[in-house]
Amino acid sequence: MANDLNKSLYVGDEIDLKEIFKILIESKKILISTILIFIIASIIYSLSLEPSFKSSIKFEIGYIETLSGKKNLIEEPSEFISELKILLLKNPDNKLSQKVSMNILENKVIKMETTSSSVEKNENILNELISFIDERHSRLKKLKAEQKKNKISYDIESLQAKINFYTAKLSSKNQSKYLNIISNLEKEDQAIENLKLLAQNSSYTDQIFSLNQTLGYLRQNLKDLDSEVKVKSQIIGNIETDESKPKSPLIIFLGIFIGLITGILLIFINSFIKSYRES
View 1 (cartoon, one colour):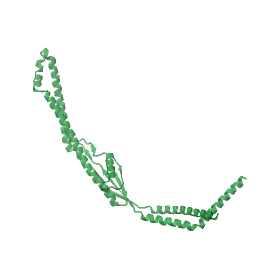
View 2 (cartoon, one colour):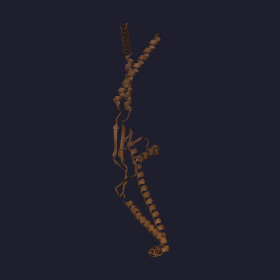
View 3 (cartoon, helix red, strand yellow):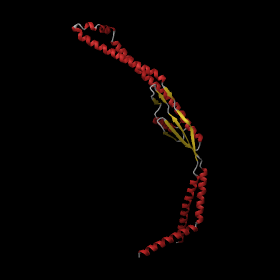
View 4 (tube, helix red, strand yellow):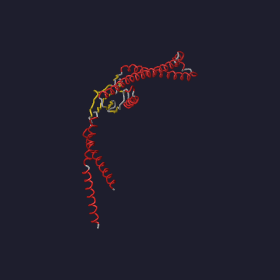
C-alpha cells in the first residue's frame, strides 16, 4: 500500500517536471528574447557608467616643542576631525559638496579620502581642506602663544603686587625695630612684643624671598616662549588617486540571471492565462 503511494507520487512529480520542461521549450522564444533584452540593457548600463576615482592624502598635525623637549600638538586629532566635519556640513561657497572620510592613522597623522568621477574635483576639495587647516593652525599657534604670554604676564604682575605688599610691611620703622630687637630683648616687659615682631618680619622676608624666586622663574619662562620650536602642520607626500572601473562582467552576468528568472516567470504567467481562458 505504502509502496504504491510512493510510486504514484514519483510518477506525478515526473509528469509535472516533463510538463514544465515542455512549456519552457514551447515558449523558448519568450525566454531567449527576455534574456537578450536584459543582456542588452546590462551592457548599455555598464557602458554608461563612468569610472570612479578615490583620492587620499595624509596630513600631519603640527606641534610646539618646549625647551624641555615636550611636544604639544597644535590641535588634538579628535578636535581636528570635528572641525573638518563642521566645515563640510556648512559647505562654504558650495566648494565641499561631496563626502570626505577621515581616519586617525597615528597620534598626529590624519588620512583624508574622497571619491567621485573626477580626479580634478577630488583634488580641489582636498586642497580646500588643506588651505583651511593651514589657516586654522596658524591662528591656533598664535593664539596659544598669546594665551601663554598673557597668563605668565598676569602671574608676574600678581607676584609683583604681593612682593610690594610684603615690602611695604617691612617699612623703615619696622626695619629699625627689627634691627634693635636683640638689644630690646633684655628688657623683660618688651620681650614678647619684640619676639612677635621678629617672627613677623622674618615671615615677611621669607615670603619676599620665595616670591622673588618664583618671579624669576616666570620671567625666564616668558623669555623661553620665544625659543620654543614651532613645527607647522603639513601634508605627507602628494595626493594619491586610485581608479575604480565599472564591473561590467558582473553587471552582464546579473543581467543574464535576472533575464532568465523574468523569462521563466513570463512563460508561466502566459501559460496560466492560456489555460484559464481555455477552461
